[in-house]
Length: 84
Image (cartoon, rainbow, N blue to C red; front, side):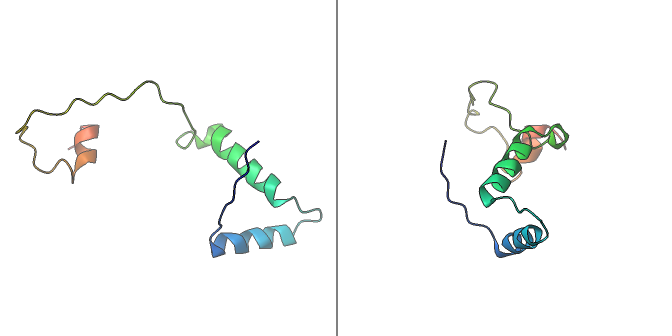
């Protein structure tokens, strides 16, 4: 089991405290964080955020000098997705 120290922003802490105040039998902070992490990692409805292990090693082949693209570092998403 791993121990961790977390820092919550003030607004999230306030929401957490308000939630705990409404519970007849308030869960521990540890159990709340554990449940949130489990849901984040496993909930099928959060497909876009679901953790997936890497499919393989990333191999990048650098472009030859003078590839003709001067703005790739600024507009990299467009080049990587192939969308104009």
